[in-house]
Structures are given as structure tokens and as C-alpha cells.
Image 1 (cartoon, rainbow, N blue to C red):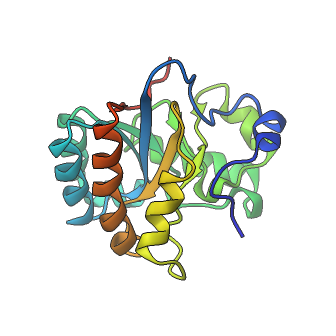
Image 2: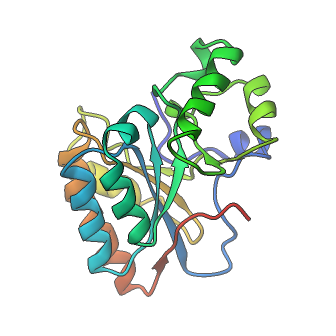
Length: 205
């Protein structure tokens, strides 16, 4: 089970993590997890470019290590990158020492002060340590593109029905999510561009 729209109670329980940004402007924050993935990440970059959209890519260290050329393309496109651990670890089932070491290993390849825990699963003790060095970024809207039991149309509706100004939206540039993400992303970009929204990368400020 997962929440498409992050409940307010969760945001209040973990107020030091970033769930969304202020709703003062018509601005959205697209994020992509688990890459870089050959062809899929490059396709994503081309779609974003069509709309002048900037995004944030939370990279798995072992994937980034294999594809430095894609990392260069992400940066050259004006997008931000973030740390998503080296081995895509679940913080709830990983000792804090192992978890932090894995993040630091990713940091050697993905130099960024932005961090997102895989699956959104991170313990309070892990979070406390991470906040000394990183901005811990969660999300406001989960597209569900990773869920192979939902249709691509449902994935699109998940985003359109729950996004508000300032929302941080999660997609995945992964093989598992590709069919749903590649259907939903262009339609999300078109829909909100027509409503004069802009798409910005996350910053560490």
C-alpha cells in the first residue's frame, strides 16, 4: 500500500523533511528516481526539453557509476541531481551504520546535498544524521508509475488529480516504470504548461 497524496499528518510528524514547496507561485517540481537508465533517462531529458522544463534526478550510485555520460547530459540540461543511496537500500531494514556508509559511497559519484530515501523509508536516527549534511527530500504526489498493477491512464490521473502549486511529484526513469511514465509525463507537461505552470529543479537553499 502507498499514498498517492502524502497525508498531512506525515508531513507534521516529519517536519524537517521536504514534502512540498510554498504555494506562492505556479511552480511544480518533477523528480525522477532510480536512474540513470540508458534510453529511458535520455528519453525523459528530451521530453523535458520540449517544454523547457527542469527537474531533479535522484540517482542510484551503482547506476550512476555505470553511466557517467548520462549524468553529464542531466547536468548540461540544467537539471539537478540528488543522492538515492548506492544500492537503493531500504532504511527500515538496514542498520544505520550500513545505510550511512552506502549514502556516502553514492556521494563519491553523485555529489549533491539533496537526498531522497528509497521507498521513502528512513528511520528517525538515520534522518537525524542525514539532516546534518543533506536536505532530505520526500514528496507530495506519487505517480505510482512503478506499480505494474495500475494502468498508464491511472498513473496520469494520480498526478492530475492531486497536484497543487508547489507539489513535488515523483516519477521513475526505470525499466519497470517506463510504460506508465512515458505515457503520463508528456501529458503532465502539456497540461500544466497550458495552465502557465513552470517546472523547476530543487535547490539546497
